[in-house]
Length: 193
Image (tube, rainbow, N blue to C red; front, side, top):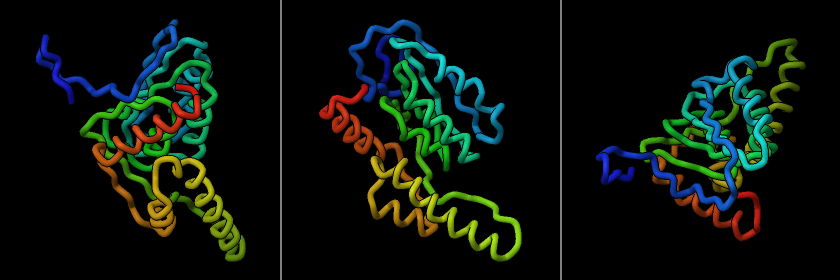
């Protein structure tokens, strides 16, 4: 954390957020601690879908994860947002919160945060053959989803370990160079900042 010399207070580092855009409106919205129902995320989705070009949406993230389908809706809304979204990782993030936190264009990282990545949790109910088919399909789908949503920030070895059932924990200090490399790579390609 950086110390503000005038007030003596500590601030969350914003070194990953660089923009030359004119800002119209700044919106701050907090992702719920747990993504359990659509009503938990309605305000987040409305804000992301309703932002205009030139707006800034500060998405404050810290929590235990939750429903994969809700997480996918939020990630899609981040990438489709007309404004500039800043993923502000304020606290430890687990599971789907980690996946949301690493998908975006701008990142602010609290040095005390950490990330937990793991394979998807799901429930299969039915006749024996139905459960087998569901597990087979869902395993392949989850591995594909992990590659799509995490390969830009995790190594191939880390992804393989997660898909085998390993819990992966990375500190803010371990993630910081990964975010920096990601942003540098995107800036070279001329992508949205």
